[in-house]
Amino acid sequence: MRLTIIGSSGSFPGPDSPASCYLLEADGFRMLLDLGNGALGALQRYADMYDIDAIYLSHLHADHCLDLCSYWVARTYAVTGPKPPIPVYGPPGVADRMAQAYGLPTDPGMRTTFDFREIAPGTQRIGVFTAELDHVNHPVTAFGIRLEHNGATFAYSGDTGSCDEIVRLARDADLFLCESSFHDHQENPKDIHLTGSEAGEHARRANARRLVLTHLVPWNDDDRTLAEARTTYAGPIDLARPGAVYEVTGPTGG
Image (cartoon, rainbow, N blue to C red; front, side, top):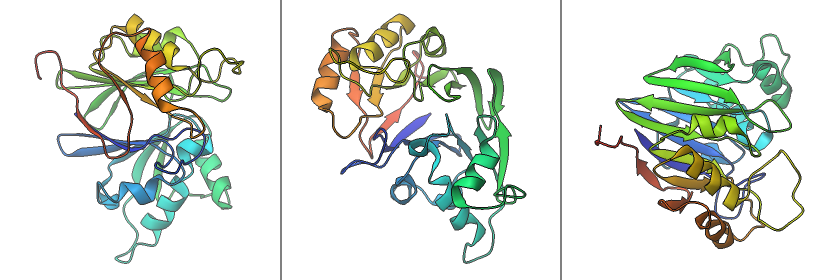
């Protein structure tokens, strides 16, 4: 698997990054994990936007899904004609939510351009990947995801506060992409996001081989977030930066 960071800013786009969006590729299959505001423009630096095979939306906050509206325009009104529908996996109500975001009638909404598929906890196939999903700890219905392919494992927290579900999804992951929106020693709202040290603790409990911190809100000091994560996790840690590419391989390189 190959992971490319398209956008890693939390809550809204920052000066150097769009909101959440990640491109995961394997065996010619290209999947977007989230498509937050500002991400569609940046995506075009790394991939032909018409070569995307599927989209996964972890939840329906704007910083994770809003550029699906722009992508609907791009696929519906392409110069060469409408592009064929592609799957969009998202929480219950995803099709109506996206239609409302663009001011469309909910019937048909965006359904002629996207094949909306509502997700639920459990295991399913998404393209070439075996996907395991579960609810995580956020004020709206939100999911974490574990993706396996050819002996390699990737996990993505989406937005979450502390929860055992994300530890289970990230168990022994070769790369764990985990949100880290808050700083320690502040009066942070409960059950919304993680601090750097909490992200590190979840990675340690999961025995993840590598941790990449994302959902980095523009007003925070990223170096502090990284330092806090290093107090609880001893493995390799990176800050998610747009354009960064990770080859996700299993322990034996498979």
